[in-house]
Image: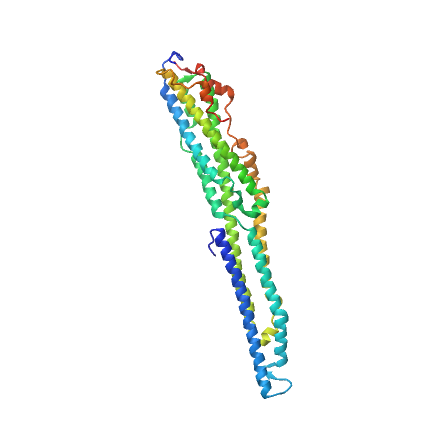
Amino acid sequence: MGDIGSFQVQSRELRQEGQEWQTRKQAVQEAHDLASHGLGKGHMFGYLANVAGLGGYHDTFISAITDAFADGVQTFDYMSAALTSAANAYDGADSTAAESADHLKSRLPR
Amino acid sequence: MTDITDWDQFASEVQKRCQELFDKVWGELDRMAKVLNDAADHFDWVGLLFPIPKLIWDALTSDDVERAIDKFNNEILPQLEQKAKDVVADITKVVGTLAGDPPGLKKLSFDYAACREALVYPAPSIQSEIQQLGKYWKGQAYSAYSLAAGEQVKAMSDAALGMERAADMTNKGAAKILQLWVDLNDKLIGGIVDVAKLLSDATTVDKILSFEIPTVVSAIGDLIAFVQSIAKTLEDYWVGVGFQDQLDWVKLNNGATGLPHNTWPVIHPGEVDDMSDPHDWGVVA
């Protein structure tokens, strides 16, 4: 993989950026876990609130945002892996170090 | 002001108040019955010694006592008994509609607020990261990354905004329920004192004779009205939240507030191809 670029590569910057996405991934994972505490808890608003449909609104929102966070975690994992894979390829130390395009894409949410 | 923290405690407090109301009403009715019995016994005893048609004792005639007993048996007792049953039935019914879980909602609101804190943490801006990376990376993959990275980080701040709104509304809902519970309980305490005082004024036969049943019934009725108004206040509040308060929950639901459509942004397939394919990677000389 060393023939990808004919330039001296600063792969350290790519790895560092890849690590930033791991940090972001952890943040979104934490948000996912916290938000999931509210799944199906709309009944806590009580009978009268649910006459106005509030519990349902709450549950629909929390369900959607929790799914969104799960997708975010996968997407950030992909971003991190893509950068790290590029860094590995530029380093060229090992021809198997970089992930294949298909493998990278498989990290994305379906 | 009472300190109520959860539904079980609220229900228990209200049950206690209802029992207190019953105890007060029955206690006072028992006392009135005793006053009348004592008076009747007195006339029975004096009548044996002095068999005259109309006895007078303590400025009362035996007719007065009979009328007071009739009034007690036919008006005071059945009406107060019925009213007390009505108020407890109404309170039980209304309190059932006030059920909710404010402590649970508060906990959720803290979790939602923590979501925001998790998503918005001190870090270099993505723009500065992209700019820094541009010193060493170029080509289609870098261009694709620059676009995708900006969109992805924006999703974090959008979602944080949505969770912050959810936290605010959940917390407000919890506070409203708790406040109305406390209001209701405090009103019950005050109302029972009022009713008891009205009843306790009927200490003699002549006071029982002049006893204003409608006043006591009205005082108990006030309790029912207040309890119903509490339920209405809570219902109005929720209707207000659902339909007037900028339709915040609805906006969160349809993604108008917070993360658009409540779905995480998908990276454009073209950008994915560029970032995933090693042939699109390039470096700055």
